[in-house]
Amino acid sequence: MYALEVEHLTVRFPGAERPAVEDVSFSLAPGQIAMVIGPNGSGKTTLLRAILALQPATGTVRVFGLPVRQAYPLIGYVPQHLRFDPSLPMTGREVLHMPLAAMPRAARQARLAWAAATFGLSDFLEQPLGTLSGGQLKRLLLARALLHSPKLLVLDEPEAGVDISGEYTLYQLLERLVEEQQLTVLVSSHELNIVLHVATQVLCLNRRLLGMGPPMQVLTPQALFQLYGPTVAFYRHQHGESP
Ligand code: ADP
Ligand code: MG
Image (cartoon, rainbow, N blue to C red; front, side):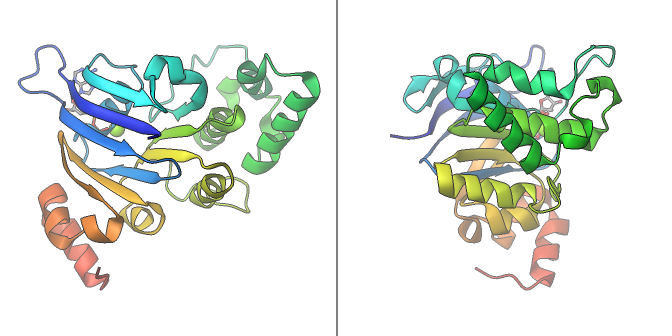
């Protein structure tokens, strides 16, 4: 069974001349790390939000065979733009408690300890959200997205080199989780260097899906030129990476 199946997904914003995402179809087997790349405005955020049914769209999405809304317990998501009311009187610990509310106390404590250690949260767990830095907030939300052991993790442009605990980078942790738990990851990124080293599948998006496949197959100079224009194709050429 596929972890994710997307068929003919199209998003039209009211008044826009053409769809922001047009007729996108692809599927992901469990255990893939799939990276969506494309220039600013190419529809990455819109596609991820449409997949999660957070954005009205036409087409169908199934997650482990289920309609996406029914699959929410299997999904973790960190949006690109974090919106928090800074006056919200809520601490990091409370944010982490929410997805675990139904869990027995001992199991919940164990999960929280794992999250705090893995994401380096201990220093600010008791602080109100409004006092956290952008990086701290991002780490907290990453921890939250993984707390309930999702089977599909969706990340919209997490900071590329983000050091989550001083020990792991985000992508090293993801690779470990994929290996240990058969997690499937769908992440948008414009860090081509990371894409090249971490992704098992690359999706080139410019409103439409221009190509998909293993990075060395998809990230050809021609494809990068088509996607980004001359600068990036030249960059890759200069660094001598060849398929
Ligand atoms: P990316 O994440 O690749 O930078 P987005 O998905 O944010 O791209 O945006 C894709 C296109 O859709 C852009 O042209 C953007 O202006 C448009 N768009 C995004 N959100 C909205 C919205 N809420 N209303 C109207 N247009 C939108
Ligand atoms: Mg975006």
